[in-house]
Length: 125
Image 1 (tube, rainbow, N blue to C red):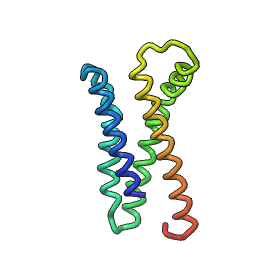
Image 2: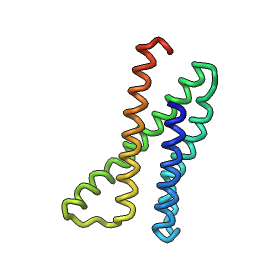
Image 3: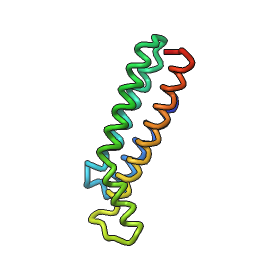
C-alpha cells in the first residue's frame, strides 16, 4: 500500500500544481492538494519501514489525512455535480479542483481500508 500512497501523493501534487498554474498562479489555496500530496508522500516513504508497527502507524496517518481531505472537499464534489446539471458556480476552476481532490481522497481511503482489512485477515498485523 506504500507504493500506492506514493502514486496518490504524486497525483495530489500534480493536481495542486495544475490548479495553481491554471488559475494564473494567483490563488495559493489551489496548492492545498499539493500540500496533502507532500504529506502523503512523506508518511508514505516512512511507511516503507521494516517495523510492522511503524508501517501501520504511518499508513493510518495517511488514511486519516485522506479522510479529512475528503470531508473538507465533499461540498466541491456536490457543487461540481450541480454545475454539471446546469447550475452556476462561483469559481469553476476551484470547483473542479475540489471535486477531483474529493474523488482522489475517497478512492485512496477505500483502497486503504480494503488493504487494512486484508492485512488483518491474513494475520500480517
